[in-house]
Image (cartoon, rainbow, N blue to C red; front, side, top):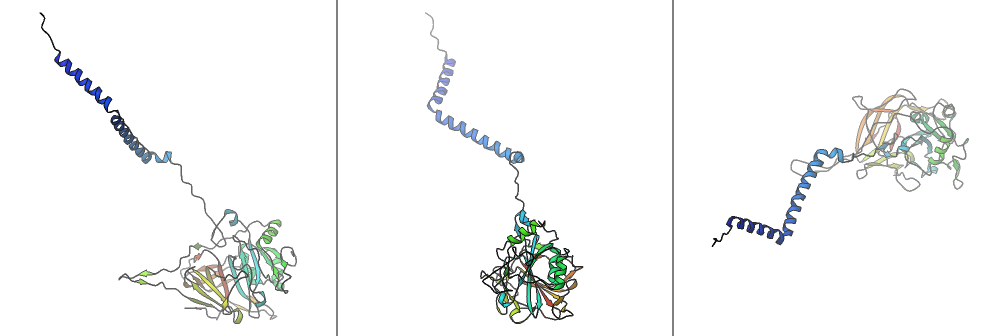
Length: 371
């Protein structure tokens, strides 16, 4: 009789194998979760490593949209508007002409006495449109000379003999005289002449374009972003209110043409007043330049005593008001084709805030004041 034999070791292996298979059969969900988890972690680690080290290859480059700034105002605008021709318009300031249109939209305004203490403006436009500008009045030589470096097309309604000779020579920009272009500048029949001539930037640009003037070439002033004065904190943690000038007097003329400004810290602008009243436009908006400049000039009546003569070249004292501060500088200009420059005591060009600049010609000897 053969002895009965039990394969002990093999039986153990079979039993072990059976238990492993049983484990897989009984817990397939756990195995799946473990495998998926491991694969997920591995994938995440891979992508983190990949993007950290190869991001320049995968990530598309960030292309910043280019910015364009008006050469006249320094304000951000479209590329097309930076290439527009600069338009200069003579605007009347007699009481019969008020309230005017277009002064609020102008990028730059020169103010001076025309005759008899009555002031007049030459307003320049480029990036901002104005549907109505006026009343347009006659031009004088010094307005032409101030506007000349901006390579302008100048609109006016006649002018003094010398001024007409200058503008018609073709050496001082494109001449758009109301008496030669009555369809570009029109008469408002609801108002009395001569305080009823008006135009628009649309009309002026169309006329300039038809006559071959499609842009203006000039060297713009250096600009900066304006910033109103802010409160400070002292060593004890107490707030120190901001210091700034509140009122400015610019003695360009007297009476109804006396000019003052009140600084508005909330807008960082100077609110303009004439004859003690708010200087409002035809849309009831107060004129409020970003920069006010009082430029001391040599002025006198012409030999015949009919017109004012103002020297626009050479140099002199000027006062620049911006960001709630006042700064005495020097203005200088080599010739009538040179751009007017404003320099500090070290001879460096003073940067002007972006936006509207208002320049008043003040007779030397008058006192510009602020407080």
